[in-house]
View 1: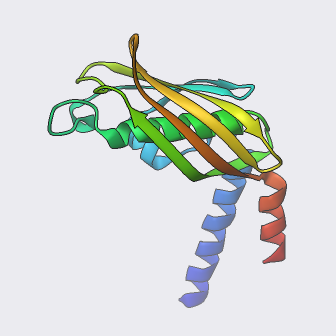
View 2: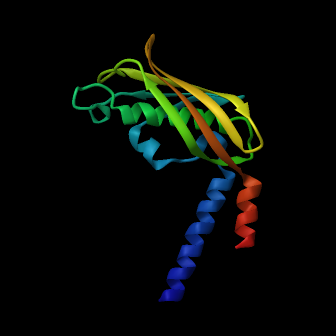
View 3: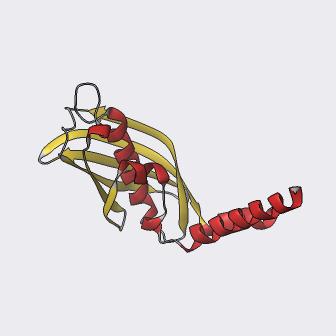
Length: 161
């Protein structure tokens, strides 16, 4: 029984890694973002844009966009901008993020748009900024630092283990 469980675990891990390794950089599935309904508008050359149509579940007790939704969109769009610079990047990890909220994000039915860009990239650390807009109103700005992992690093770690 244990042997069968081990073989199944190896299969699931191998399948997941194959899926991750073959997925285009903008199509890496992130269940939390899928659950929220965040959609990629565009991504390329160190720039990215995502959008979200606000639903009741995205609101706080004042019936405006929850700050966690705003920060999630900014985190995602900055990471996506970084991943767009190199097709070998498979994953990004947020090291640091600062967000300034300027006004309420919007109400149910509004479409929020987050725009991100890379300010500077080293070999594995990218410095990014993002803005979140509700129509023509700037809702929040963010700055973030991201560590990116390339396909070769993932392969190397798998073969070492």
